[in-house]
Length: 267
Image (spheres, rainbow, N blue to C red):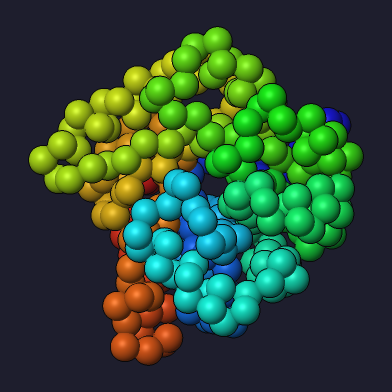
């Protein structure tokens, strides 16, 4: 691809600054379409470098109970693919790189080429597809190439070396390294697993490696930022909105957390 996406450009700038990126995730349409836009904009004001817009899905394989609950509420309100794209457009218009995280079924339903085209038209930079295997991704890779969208695949500590190299070769924008922070007592060993995974990914690519780890505070963000190119935070933001008595309180809490996390990755 000759054109670099806004995501790729921003990740390169952040790398040049000598720090990790902070990427914030929220499900589209939670707590409402307008509410999710307000919360994502609050994340950006707080210092998030890129936004992941979650396409709410009824049968997620990777999401924990907090994100599942938010996605269920979004679906109950009738959040559609058109709403997801409207949210992407609203966030991309702030000049913040915006990616969609979605399971494969919604893309297949929408139409592979149509989704890539409409996402590009909305200003989206890329798509994270946690359940799409590289062996079945040829149509998707062709559609993303044609529309200058970054295909972002997920690798895990269990991904074998040969497969990892194959997956990483098809990524653009960044590589999503998945792990779990686990309970507090087990955090150090889980973090070591993620660090080893990042090191393995770097043997195969110069792309930034971003880690989704269940990070919820500045200390953890700083810890992951020591070895990864990006720190992805989702559940902690969602939890604040779930627990807030009203939208304004939730949005203010989201901005405050983003500010704290941004200081963590920059420390």
